[in-house]
Structures are given as C-alpha cells and as structure tokens.
Amino acid sequence: MQTKTRMNVYFEPDLLKKVEALALRRNVSKSAVIEAAVASFLSADASERLEAVFARRMDKLGRQVDGLDEDLAILGEALSLFIRFWLTVTPPLPDSAQASARAKGAERFDGFLQSLGRRLATGDRFLKELSRDVDANSQASPKTE
Image (spheres, rainbow, N blue to C red):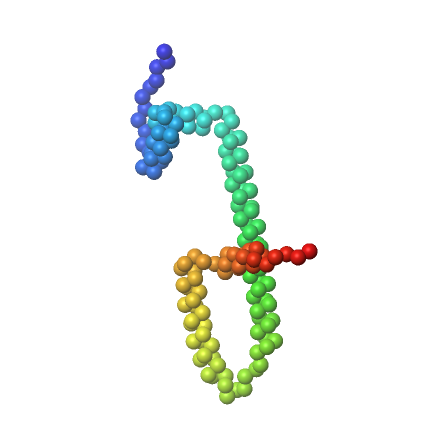
C-alpha cells in the first residue's frame, strides 16, 4: 500500500466552498479533489490546457469586441442621421429669441441628463431595446415573397 504524506494548506473561503461542492457532487473526498487538481496542474499537458483556455477566452473577447464595434457603428450612424435631420428642419432663431431658447435648451438638457441617469441605473440600454423592438417587429409582420 502506498503511503501518503499529510500536508496542511490554506484556502480562500470561496475556493474551499468550491472544492467542498465538487467533492460532494463527485462523491469523493476533498483531498482527492485537491490531489487531482495539483496533479493536473503539474502534468506535462497542463500548459496545453492553459493555452486552450486562453485561446477560448481570446475568441470570446474577440467576439465581444466585434459586437462593440457594431454597436458603436450603429450609434455613430444614428447620431449623424439625427444631426443631419435636426440641421435640416430647424430654422435659425432671430437674435431676440436666442436668450429664451438657450434657457429652454438648458432646461431640456437637464431633463435629458436625468432621464439618461435613470436608464443607466436600470441597466436598460438603447441598443438592447432597439434589437428587441426590431425582433418583435420582424416576428409580428408576415413576410410576403
């Protein structure tokens, strides 16, 4: 029979909870879980597994960046369309109306900032809402071909 040497180690409480949960799920001792983890870490193929983990993580990050690029392009297009429309349909104000327009604009901007703050606090984002609306509209309208 092979003898084992006792070793005392310290774990962060969260990590120990994970070890205990895995031991319960697998119906093995905590020592067996830790021994297998250390053996896996020290095995020759550990670096290959680590490389595979990094590759998967990099792929995921790449997809997230692609999504952000698309979101940024949508926002840029929406903003440019709004600015073009606003400049096209808004007539210039006479000098006598400039002061009251600035005051009203400041009031509206404060309202905009408050509304923006509420939306950011709830976590609801325009692009998510937009994609839900687009999906709902495409499912609701029958396609004719």
